Amino acid sequence: MLSAAVLLATLVYALIGIVIFAVGFLLWDRLTPIDLWKEICVNQNSAIAILAGSVAIALALIISSAIHG
Image (tube, rainbow, N blue to C red; front, top):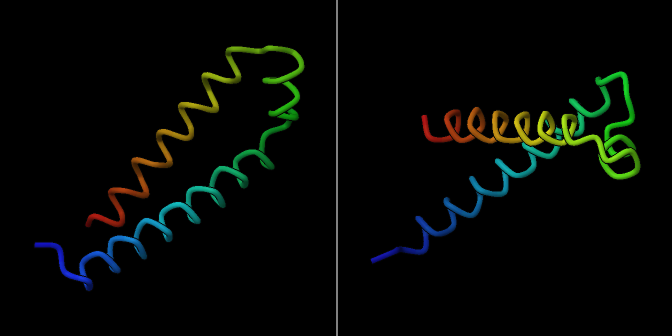
């Protein structure tokens, strides 16, 4: 059975992971020399979209590994 403490810890770790992911992705977006969202939405640059998705997956894997231990 799932106890309240385990549920609370899961929610806290999930929230921490989402916040770290958002900060990391925004930091990566700011460090790139191009306007990422303009390239993806206006110019329909699929290569940049694939790169952004790859960075998002990599960040998520790093954060999940760090949280899991």
